Structure formats: structure tokens, C-alpha cells
Image (cartoon, rainbow, N blue to C red; front, side, top):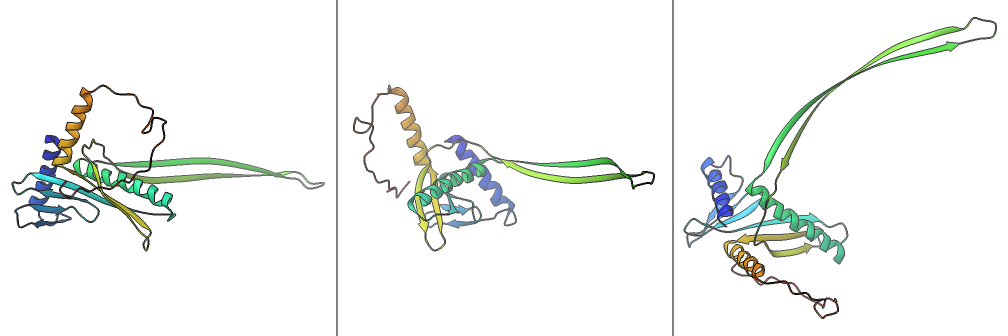
Length: 215
């Protein structure tokens, strides 16, 4: 929790100190003293407690749906979920590199042709050609990787008019503590072998819904 907390505070404080030119989003203050920062159009949203500590962070990502059936929507939501998580990772740390490559090629070609007509001496024609090619390529890449703990899905949906599926994921101080507590609990217990939920390996029907109001 300490590592994520420091990263959030440092990144947001830098953006606020640099002024509007460096801040793509806006900061909204709540009556209780807490604040919410929307980091750009497709960026993450950070919410602070009234004491200045980070309370939660969320990320929303939408992706087009090629086939509007249940399988196509589910696939698009999985993609949106992973990209929403990636946006949080890029917010924490991102490495950017730029590379320039100059390429020069020279090809010398020799063509010889011989023409012969009846009763005449053969004539040979030779053509020399040189082809020069020079190109300049510039490639800019970015790389981001990291570990997230306590990530939960807050919302997922599908808009039929725009044919877009979306997912909202979030992390908070509560979910991080809960994840750490569950990990500690499971590491202390020995794994128990089971053949499945009903003993035969069959998965019963289920409904997944997040009822989190204060996460």
C-alpha cells in the first residue's frame, strides 16, 4: 500500500504544481474536504481523503463490439477490463524511448542483351544501372509494467446504439487491505483438494454483481 500511495501522491502533486499546461484533467473539491482528479479524457480518476491521503483510483475503458451477441460483448468487456488496468499501470510508471534509423542502399545492375538477325553479325547491347535508396525511420515506443493489488470491477456494460462495451475497474485503500489480508490468510492454510463445486467438476449457475457502495 505504501508504494502505491507514494506513487499516486507524487504523480498528482507534480501535475498540480505544474499548472493547467501540464494537467490534462480537472480537480473537483467535495464539501467534506476530499478531492477528485480526472486525469484527462481517457485517463484514471483519483480521489483523496480530506487528510490528503489517496482514497481510491478508478479507470474506465470502452472498446467497440464487432458482434453484438453475448459472446461478442463478453469478449469486448474482457479486452476493456485489461486495458483499464493497463491505464492504471501506465499512470504509475511508463518508460518511453525514441529511436532513429538511417538506411542507405546501393544496387549496381548490369544488363546485357544480344540481337541477331539472319545473315547479319550479332550485336550486343549493355546497359549499366545504379539505384540509390536512402530512408530515415523514427520509432517511438512506450513500455509499462507493474503489479496491482485489490483490483475490483465496479461496472461493466454495453451500449447498443454505439455498439461499445465498457468496464470500470478500481483500487482503494480498503480493497488493498482486504487483498493483503486474504493473501496472508491463504498462505497460512494448506490447500484442500476438491473435484468441483458439486463433487463432479460441474459448475452451477451463477450471477456476478458488485454491490460495493463504499469501496
